[in-house]
Amino acid sequence: MIQVDHLTKEYGGLRAIDDISLEFPKGQVTALVGPNGSGKTTLIKCILGLTHPTSGTITVADQQINGGWEYRKLIGYMPQIARFPDNLTVRDVLGLVQGVRGRAERPVNALADIFNLNGDRKKRMSALSGGTRQKVAAMIAAMFDPPIYILDEPTAGLDPISSGAMKEFIRSRRTEGRTVLLTSHIVSDIESLADRIVFLLDGHLMFTGTPDELKARTDRDSLEAAIPQLIQERSR
Ligand SMILES: Nc1ncnc2c1ncn2[C@@H]1O[C@H](COP(=O)(O)OP(=O)(O)O)[C@@H](O)[C@H]1O
Ligand SMILES: [Mg+2]
Image 1 (tube, protein in one colour):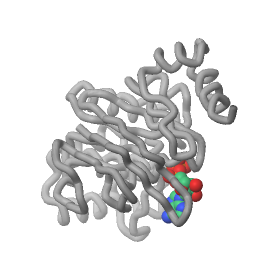
Image 2 (cartoon, rainbow, N blue to C red):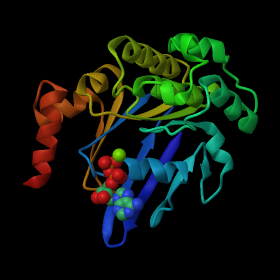
Image 3 (cartoon, rainbow, N blue to C red):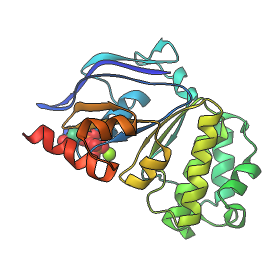
Image 4 (tube, rainbow, N blue to C red):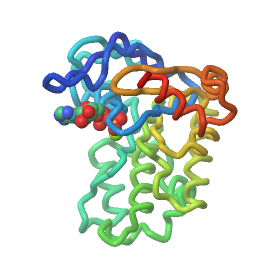
């Protein structure tokens, strides 16, 4: 669904992404993993067209993106820190988004039920907890029923019930055959959600494969142990 070919992104002299080629297939949840500064957000920004690659190509649904915008309708994006106008209510924000993009294709009431947001819809954004704002961001990503979801730390900071709802939501999208790309530092969430792991370090693609393949490759029996092992391999 998303194909990345020999992608390189430099900021000044720094290579944030160094010649990466990989694919994000349909019907799978791919976790983008790596320590801070490894290039995860840069890769996501390149896919969203928010920054231009230094070299290489990205193809979304068989179309090379090349500075175009139309393809972005195919992507539901949930940023790590979503910013909303503070004085608007949740209902206003959801209305505003539909004013710009057209009527939601997934019923907003059903989404609010999934994330248990119905009681908050009359509240101003400034009155919401961080986790509740995150759930509003997830609702917006899902409203237009996109074939591709890009979720930056979707479960970080959520209480256990909300986190469970978010994971269930992500699994349902996979079952529908959507492409899901997420980042997470929470190993148990990666373990329970990811079909594939893409591991970046210093802009290099260190590993791509299933969680079991990662354990086998590092000769460790948990992801918790396998991930630091990969990082050590690089520093040798
Ligand atoms: N706009 C920018 N200008 C200069 N350097 C940047 C910019 N964005 C990211 N970087 C650098 O690129 C590298 C990768 O950053 P990033 O993609 O944000 O990593 P991650 O999301 O994995 O934490 C880091 O060294 C970071 O400092
Ligand atoms: Mg980041």
